[in-house]
Image (cartoon, rainbow, N blue to C red; front, side, top):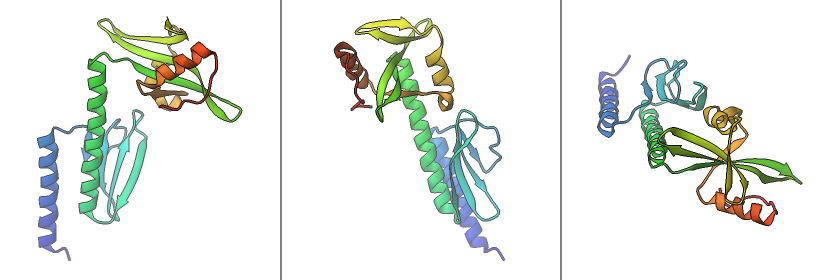
Length: 186
């Protein structure tokens, strides 16, 4: 038999979580509903044996599925993941709006070590994104083959890795020396 006091407490905790989500303006989630084919969301669902929290990627593939036997920790984990997801999305949007270039590297394995083989960058302009690759120190050429665009749109199929703003200077120094070693900064 279900204890009505416990049920009321759980309902109150669910409502408090929803109030927090609304107050913080969080989005991109599924709340106790089917998340099949939903992309880039965080979901919480009731199962036969408890609760499950997971995220989906740009292809609606489930990522980081975690099961719980109690609702309270499931709600806490859901809220934490939702906050993280929203902060990453906000950071990406802020970077895009500030027109800061994004850098990506393709690495090859040489003698057991990953060595930078190609440096790409995406710059935002008033006309939209411009994708380029480093040809020589300070010289960039257009990415006419769409390698970077494909890598950004389909990261699971790509061999490109996004790197920090500091790492390109390290790669440029390697190009200048014509000596390629593993990156020390990411």
